[in-house]
Length: 425
Image (cartoon, rainbow, N blue to C red):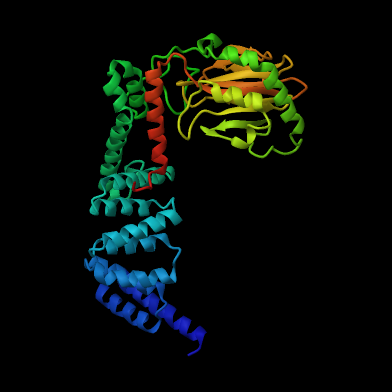
């Protein structure tokens, strides 16, 4: 029989088997699929259907080799791997299922059924912390796709599992985040942490606290009971006077960097978040950009000694910020009112600055620091004929005590840890 005839005969047999399945003639369908697999051992459909029949009979030991064969025929099919992992888990091989799901979640990180099964097999292995982390990933990735959000977006067979999973993750997150600053509570007492507790409750949607000023809406974390002031007195940060003193040397280095900057390209190490803006970073997301310090020794020495908002993998950022002439950066809300942003204008022609939407504006004046809470909706403008430049950096909101700063920093680090929740450790 030639290849074309064999393929046609296979398709005919498969159609017959499907018809038997559709009419609930399972035994006849299984017999036909078995014959198909014997004659056409590379029939993916026959492997999958025979494995399904085995699982329906609660025979995962029979299903596993069929699914292993199916995976050799379709190695990039994550659902087949999940089916095989399920068979492993229910035939006394949870460690094999765990290894397989770790492989699949690494290869297909957005395939949330694999994360769900990984959570379940880690539970079977007694790894409750690892199970929680995988469950968090499953729910987060499903909901990013619009699934598991409510009853209508959840398959009925999974509804109870998902509801219990959401509650489990919620309780776990609350426990982990509260524990992140528990040592500080033990040392200083709960009264010192009242606003931090309120911020955590708000983050976990366990309180209805919200800013009194409608112009303020932090995208990430809101700390209640902080003064709601868009612009702060620079004197609240004692080190801003050092910015004034260092201004001439810092400006000279910014001018030199600007003169060496390619006209149509971003300097290596810079990032561009808008066509009108570039940043030359000394610190970015808490990480020191070592290669950018030697060309700017005065700025480097200054930045390294400032009391900035330091949170592992998150903050501060400190950079020369360039803004093109005749440009705008659209209005936006910052991440949190727990920090303030400090600008030291370096190149400003009198027609550039910062404006709070429906509120005050500050025109940049060279050498005069500007401190503002960027959780208020704000925009930047540069109507000058030349590129503007500032030294920009993040600092803790000066109305927070050092104890609150420590606790918030540790809590934010714990929150960011959920992004790497795939790890067992």
